Amino acid sequence: MPGKVPVSCVITNFNGRGLIEGAIASVLRQSVEISEIIVADDASTDGSREWLQAVAERYPQVRPVLRPANVGVAANRDLAMRNANQPFVTHFDGDDLIAPRKIEAEWTALEEREDAVAFSRIGWLHLVRPWRSSILDPAPTVSGSAADAVGRLTARHGPIPRDMLMSKSLYEKAGGLEHGLNLYEDWQFKLRLAALAPAWSPTREIGTLYMQRGESLSKVRRERLAEAQAGVALSQLDMLLDCLGEDRLGRMLAARFGPGLQGIVPAERRHALLERFPGFADAVPAQAEASRRRRNKLSLLAALPLIAKGAAARQAAAKLLPPWPR
Picture (cartoon, helix red, strand yellow):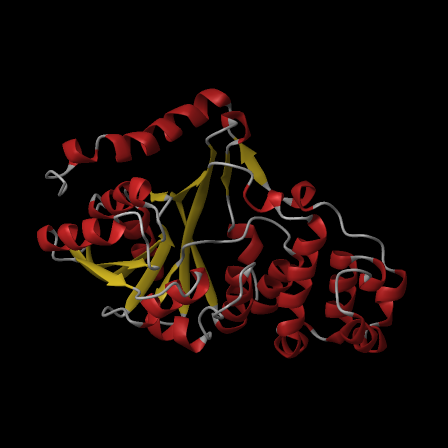
């Protein structure tokens, strides 16, 4: 295993001064040295930018990218990924952490293939209700053929990989993240990625420690989420048809979004869709997503040490690394 890997790790930040410290520390403490750590700040006003500039003076592998104006989550991440100097890229949000062996395990699994995607399990840690924490294993979701992976991702059957490691060229070939898309921009990209990548290589490690501090997307009305999901699926309709075929896609979308798509898809698009997929007219409503997720539930006792490690990475970062700039 090389001491330094040709990977750019992108961390996105917006007014997360109190959290970004732990995120950067979790990359600096990886079991292999990361060649480049890009911290893309989306015009923060909480002192993040000044602090990041001071960190970069001490850690040359940290490269702040400071947006002069707010461009939104998808554009901020996409521009940073395209601006990476290394041939392989990964990313995560500035309010999360990555486990110490994430990048090493994914680099090993990738085997330097430019057409493959490496990913790890996800530690989903609910900080308000720790007993709801889970270890998510996305491997079954993207196993098998490209059509199988695209099908499961389209139906959202099982946990979806996140914060994967891949070549920069594959990221760009898949089209990157769509700027201006505020919900499910990751899902849209992963649909395109699954159609291109011949291999998804899982590790047995926990990769991202996803810290849920509130209710996240559950605060958004169910109708709005369903509309956003349908919009993403329809935006990729030609690719999905090529990959899945009309009959399979029609049955899948009907089961996913329910009868008639009433209230989910605008009327003019709904009529065109019903002409192409008449099965929508009498489809049964989709199951609640939570009932389809494959999770290994953590006990409260198992969740608390992981949450404590996340808190310690932030509270004691100065003890784990040379002192941060003040």
